[in-house]
Image 1 (cartoon, rainbow, N blue to C red):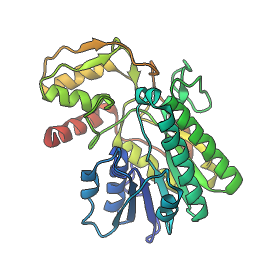
Image 2: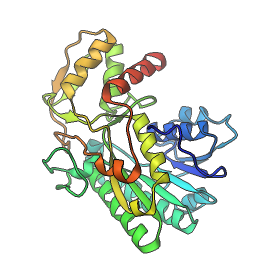
Image 3: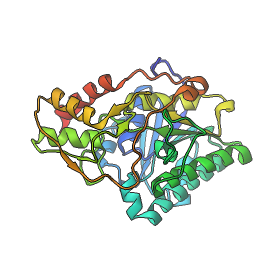
Image 4: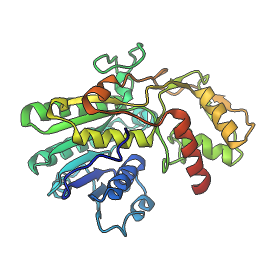
Length: 324
């Protein structure tokens, strides 16, 4: 259960791209705690310097400021690396609708640069972030790998393209790639600020600041909210997975389903607030319902998430109370 007992080669070197971001910095922290050497590659366009500063005193940590859109940077970063955890990307469905070319450059070309660098530098395994957005308008729940619908945003298209490249790089070149389709990840160090902030940290901050949060749509949308600890486990287990599991994508979630309005009331209760939300228009490109079938990840990666929504949200709220 979990990832506390997962061990790698003593001299293993991990490269975490996007390591100054929310998920990336948590991966860096987990690996450093286990005593491994970690390189963080980030251009700080999205990530935060404070998420780098946390680890600069650790002798096992190296920060490389660089852009995944530059192949030479990716090549240097991958030199001598055993495992790549590729988290660098631009998120947000609505923003991708406004900036499709930018998303193509970062999320497709950037990922391709990283795969090519990993291949040329002899990296053992390449684990990369995909997204539940690849399911598009496919109506069936739970979402199951192999049952994808029409894509609803440039962001979703970039993640689908990454998966196709992952498949090809395994088939053509033998690079062991593992795509992780994240479902609404939340937890410590997730940024509550900005127009495109994720809903949980945004709501927590607004409620703590005595503001009225806006729910896009009627609040009856559902999500498989997934605590960061489950995501760390999935990444580490993908690095340990067999070759027979490579070249494929996996749902990474808890397998639960929470309605937005219920989640909102739970936050109010936990924070001791009695604040009525504002209901705004639905967001373009959003999937209405999201709930994951995680049986493939359980079977092929040994994934066994320990944090359900309630346990995760308690820890997240505690962190935000102390750090906001």
